[in-house]
Length: 394
Image (cartoon, rainbow, N blue to C red; front, side, top):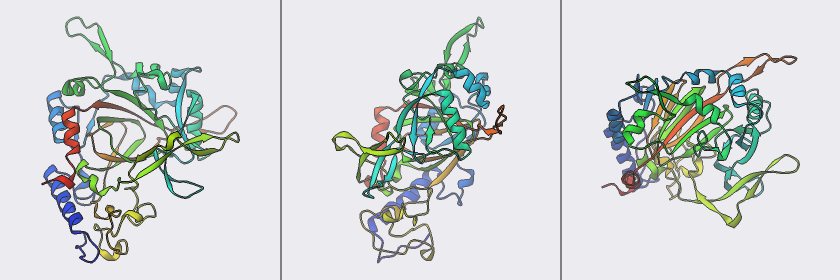
């Protein structure tokens, strides 16, 4: 970590950086992956009790949990893509996000005027079997566009974005009563989390895609329990208190991909000139990368000779003061508790499943398949997150 430079650094931003270092230390969050981050976050070998999970929520730091899907034998079948196809049948359609490059809900340089715009994906109805075919093409590098089932909004339990009820049945935990051993209410949530929080999840989602899709840096005001069934996900994260470094001050015009008669995807501005604030930096890239450099006067995490050439701080270059982002890789069978308000960028990798198809060469049917539960936060927690920013700390 380089020393402050009075000629280029802002004293107030340096103070916020010192507070960020102290805040991480107080919460047991490492300064960087190289300084204790390899053993972070903490890991539980089995799901916590409801009381223990209440304490975890209060600490508000990510935790990896193993064996959360015990008692759900139907999920083992999801390892086979052919089973998913047969389970859903030929007639069920789902809503799929389509982009040119796998970057939905992200800032894109507009191809005509070159300025950044916030790009929403094209949402396209297609049979589930067609989605799997398109994902196979993506896994083999043969796709012109990138498809991703990311509809959220409790897509496993609400049919607004397609009928995924056969997969929901596989997820359901068949509860047996203590006295009779008979089947009780089937539930698709995580009982210990629901008991700890006091109400069922706001949303139960399934995510199906390939390594071609990425999620840009953002945060959600939900307690998030995220389980990987196939492949892996890598979360690149910042704590809520470090919002002041992430440069989300500017409003960007909202565009959406549409399909032209030629089949090409084009960006079209949303009616009414809608705008949104968004984080413009990508924490998976170096600070001197083309995307990040406009928001960096120099990288204080590196020796000055190795960082961005120093230039004087401006109100737009706060990312130069940011501590290193931290990475959490979630493997098959693991569940990540990602606390509400934590900033995260997500990359993913599909597994490999090469199958023989009659009359064709073998095809790759690997997937990245995940589940997550969003639990709504209380008004008190929302207020607490709003007051967490280091800019108003005393």
